[in-house]
Length: 255
Image (tube, rainbow, N blue to C red; front, side, top):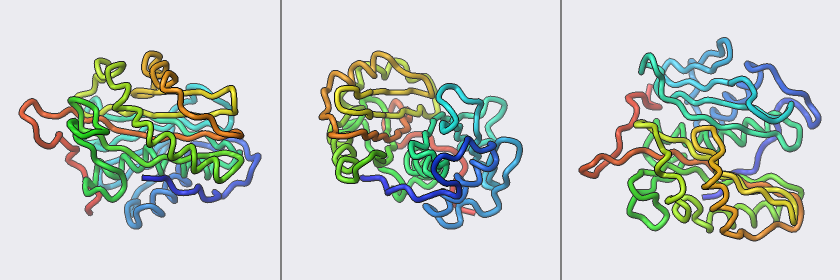
């Protein structure tokens, strides 16, 4: 699976960080473009986009990064109280355009959110624990890769590189013991930079996982010829002891 090329958002390059609700309006538009009708009736309140179908997306206080960095939390089922299950991700507008950050989130973590609620393989891929690209003991929902850089051919090459590396399956032993959520665990895979200064990073439930990041770096992925970055997102759901389908949220994309 390959991510789409990002579209231009409402603000142009060089724009400053948007207020939370303005950025979420871009997220809503991007989700709607990916799945027409999915945001029908969704309201922007406080720092959240809340759907009447029971899911929500919020902007959290910045954890790291500058004006072009946005931290988001996805809540697939807000009816589970008091501790609502959620997964975290962040998006960076490398061009300075917040619309690009909204699209990057939608095409990766957002695609996983849509698929978690839809479960028909329309937005992200399902991989079982016993498959070649699977993570032992876990059901994987994984997005395609999106890339951002100075050259379209290098973007495409890094997308292919990241997906063909089969990262999560290759380094599973370094992080599966730290997957703590009984609902789903969010994992971001990032690889980017310039020749001679590439960063490989795995974030699990919003936190950098040093051992997994080091293991990914040890895969010695090819470097691009110019500045390029690629990323994808996965949700890892526990597989029942007797096998079969994982427990999905009660919410769905259906009205």
